[in-house]
Every structure is written in C-alpha cells, then in structure tokens.
Length: 380
Image (cartoon, rainbow, N blue to C red):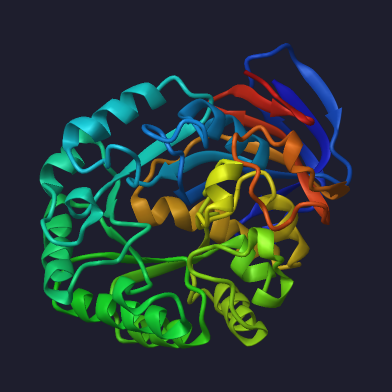
C-alpha cells in the first residue's frame, strides 16, 4: 500500500482538492508526499499496434506492454494487422493467452475481413467468443459500403463494435479520402440498426462536421483523435518522420480536432502507437511511436481536466465495454523532460517529438495492485 498525502485526484468533474489517498500495491507500506502531483485511474488506449506476431523487431507484446506502462496506459487494445493477420478466432485466442501474463491489460481486436483485403468477412461470432473486443481492418479501408454494412450487422449480432480507419483506401491520403471514408462508414451504419461504429484517428474539420451531424441524428458512432493530430500540423514535420496515416493536416484541421475533443464530439484520445524499425521507417512505413510521449504531449495541450478524464479513463472503457479496474497512475504535470527516443522502452523509436522539450510525465504506474513502472525505469 502507498499512502499519498496532499495529492490531487483526477475525477469526472476534474481535479479534486489535495487530499490523502491510499493505493493498494503488493509492496511494503509507504508514505509519500503527493504535493503538486495528480493521481488518476490508469489510462486506456483504444488503438495500438503491438506488432506481435510477425514484426518482432518493431515491437513484442512484452516490450509494448512495458512501454505502455511508462506512458500511463494500464489497458491497451491491440490491432489485427499482424503477420499472420488476426482474422481467425484461434489467432485471437493465441495472442490473448500470451497477453495474460503481461504487466498491464491487453485486449485484442480481430480483423473485420480476411487478410484485411476488404472482401470476405471474418466470423464475427467466433471472434467474439475467442475474446475479441471489436473488429477492424485498421491500417486499411478497402471495403465497399455493402461489405461494411454486413460487417457492422454481424458484429452487432456478436455484441461488439466495428472500428474503422476513416481513409478510403482507393482515394489516397488527402483530406477527401477521409471525408469519403467517413461518409461511407456513417452511411453503412445507418443501414445497420443496432450496430456500433467507432471512427479511428479523425484528422480533418470536414470529418468532424460529419461526425457531429451523425451524433445529432442519433447514430451510434464514437470517435478518437491521436496526440500527434491534436498537437501538430504538417508544417511541424521534418522529412525523416513525415509518414503517418492519416497525414498531419492544416492548423485549421488541428484546431477543429481539439475543439471537437473538448465538446465531446470526439470521445477519446488514442495513440495509434505504431512502432517501426529504422529500416522500415526509412523505407516509408507509416506511423509514430505513441505510448511514452503521450502524457507530455496531451498535458501540453492544456485541456480541461474533465476532458482528460473522459477521453483517457472513462469513455474508452465504455466504448468497448471493458471492465473497470483499480489501476492507478501518478502524474507530475510540471516535470520538464526532453524526448530521447534512444531511451524508449519500446523497440520503436520513430517519433516526431524527438528532441522536443515536454512538460508532464507519469512517474508511477500500478496495474492490478502491482507497481509496473516507477520513475524512469519500468518494473519487470
């Protein structure tokens, strides 16, 4: 047990007044001064690529879980674009079996279509029975509207949502590709009563408007934004780290994403943690490391604390019906630090924040009563 004195607690309404709080842990009893610090329930990341199986030089379940703990994430949701693709129930079950011993909680998303090719639907019921919390072809969006509608219907019958990568693959990566992808996904949802749709990494003002209108019309749709789309624009990138999907957009698009997160049109923040080897990144692979920079980037946005609670604690679990857990993280909101990718616990060091000075860091992570990260060194 650790007893924190004078700590503020992140709650639905924002930050509490300083008080004494006890956190159950498996270590010896401790008394700690929490003055100036923030205690929060562990954060949940609805969108992460752990690269396991198949791309172990980029990340493994173990390295990804350790990296997530450093970032304050006590529950992460791993996508299906592994090798082999998680498009069969047995593959989902295998990953979950190996994940059971990790220091944090890892849930798995099954593929919506076989090999992520957008043509043949996977067995949604079998995926759900194996433990998949959702279905998604994330990384691709090659489905036509009819296939997506049928996929939404099958997922609804299985009791799980569908997560959709908003960019229509056939349209490339400019803003119109996201608009077309979001429009098509919302149209498919309207044709699938009872289904639930979650739109991944929204990046444009027009997509925000479509989402706002869909929610006003009563459609069962939720959405996420990434820390990098909330904090950066295309003008902030250098050639070496420019590849991400969807691309970073204009300042106007970024402002629209921030506004939508604050007012709840965008429900959650999700990292889209996408580690790569240097060789893969040099060859043009899309994606940024997300876990270990997330707290500093998000806190730097100076969002209302109630928004952070909703976006990182409460709403992610609600969207995927994840059980509540007595997990905790301790945040120093004022600690300045410089992003040094070579010190990441993750195997992926591909970040656009390299060398940047951030303020705010997670100093302690407790998951299921066990200290899994403390200071700059994770606990194995």
